[in-house]
Length: 124
Image: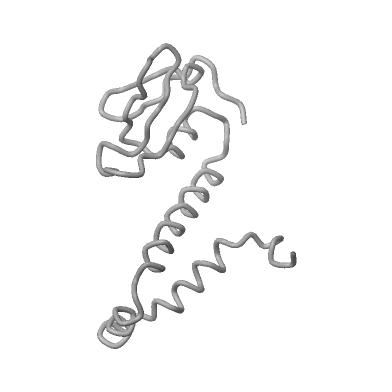
């Protein structure tokens, strides 16, 4: 992965920085939402800049990484977040969702786990 020098990267809401001045990114975990997706650390600034774009989208603009690779990483992160949420649902609520909504959370949880496990690690 090579950072493109001199390329301006949009962080959203009119914020632009040169790709080679961005030294780090961190997804916002708490309080995440529209206008608040990623903390971007920029050379020369003491505080990170709050970006409204995901770290994957920013990284795509900074580098020559194919869009498909960063897109897959973003999709895996979303599936991981969904899996965490589903795992916290208690058995009684799961039964209600299955009976009333015809949605089997146990099966969905297993399918997501299967998708998130790298193929080569299954044989380990």
